[in-house]
Image (tube, rainbow, N blue to C red; front, top):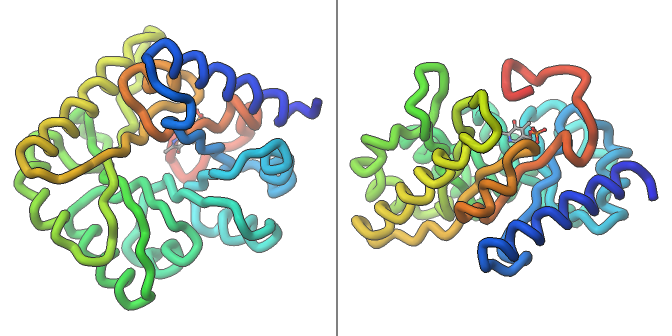
Amino acid sequence: MAEVAQQLAEVRQRIAEACCESGRAPHEVELIAVSKTFPAESVLEAHQAGQLHFGESRLQEAEDKLASLPNGLDWHFIGRVQRNKVRRILPLFPIVHGVDSARLAAHMDRITGELGLRPEVFLQVNIGREQSKGGFEPDTIDGEMEEIAGLPNIRIRGLMCIPPVVSEAGDTRRWFAALRELRDGLTARHGIELPWLSMGMSNDYEQAILEGATHVRVGSAIFGKRSYRVDGELG
Ligand SMILES: *Cc1c(COP(=O)(O)O)cnc(C)c1O
């Protein structure tokens, strides 16, 4: 088996095991293969091995790559969403993970209406309350919820986080638990359904699944080590 197919199979196997351990069905967790920095050939290889959902974090790179790939793949935009790129992001990406402010949500909603689209989005939460990170703040998101949930065009489906970097493997789990608890609280207080949780990457997707992740974003464990960084984003 080619390397990507083999690593993909291993990740799927580990997802199934984590699902089993947490009493969930494997189909409850969507594996997003994060192909940023990797060529279209790698995406094709994964696709031929049955992978449907892919994630990209940089628009220009994604536009170039998608142009040479077949239709029918499900693309997730997982990077920072710049306001001036929304008009280009939305037609390519039916699912957007990084909606990080009420202002951006309103802007996206307006453009979405103009384009006649119905994207599904995650609200990104700065779960570790880190100075260096954007996103909704856990302490103030409540006050913004009604307004965002009332936007007519974008469909808010859940929360997403990129937790603080931890020194010990295993320490990330509490941040995943915190995101789930925040979600439960928002649903209880506002009656807003937020069924999806996008959390967990190559190093910690099993822990995320144990805490309720519905979408895991896994790159290097499938495609190998990245040879360059993307725009000051994650490795
Ligand atoms: C790059 C990236 C990932 C995947 O990271 P890996 O460690 O390679 O699995 C997941 N989420 C986001 C937002 C990313 O930028």
